[in-house]
Length: 316
Image (cartoon, rainbow, N blue to C red; front, side, top):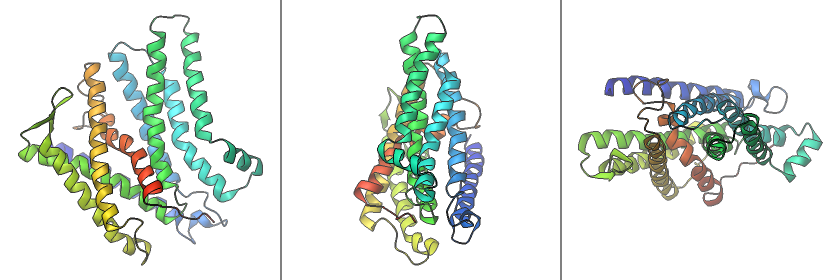
């Protein structure tokens, strides 16, 4: 099991790094992404990768919910979730290109995310009505909305972090956030496996330990500090967006909130009596097990970076 986790974990990390490198290349001045004086391709690789993961995760969550006796509108949920992930990238393109003044005016008045989310809720209700039965209608509508809100809306904050800058800084910031969150997962797993003794929340996840949680915080802080130390080399002599003290607090918050996300996903699976959410990712129990902590921590990361750390890159 450990060998499988190591192999597939390494492959997934390589895939994420490759996507970020491609994104950086398309966002670098003078590259393909700026051939027309704007950034039509900036952020697209990261956005498309997350969209694919969210869609696959929605279908996986649909199978989990059906195992619990619910009948959500999975196809509709996947469609809405994909749109929610794409919305921040569309907003960024509108701010950069401003090719359509009417769309730009509408964007300032009402976020596409709000419009898409409202349409998703209305559509979920209409799909249930089209089934011509009232049996468990309330639960099925609620589960459908939960699916695209949990995966699509929460996941969209990772793209919002990427879109804090249309250029290199945005791509690196998104990678920094994901690596900090996932390092907490790795720290929890390794520490818990090595010295875990005291149960953290046995009624939700018997495998989670207090020692594992401490290991998550420690490794997340180390990675957060290392990322800021490497930032000047990656960007070119520019100091990182976080100070040393901010990076420490950021690592702690990402580890704690990511751990809570893991517990929430465990609670959902325990309620429907499903141990592994899927078989798409061997040794990890399913795609949801990989996405649970980033999904939960992404809104906290975006809020910390924008409201507390004041990350605000100017658009051209």
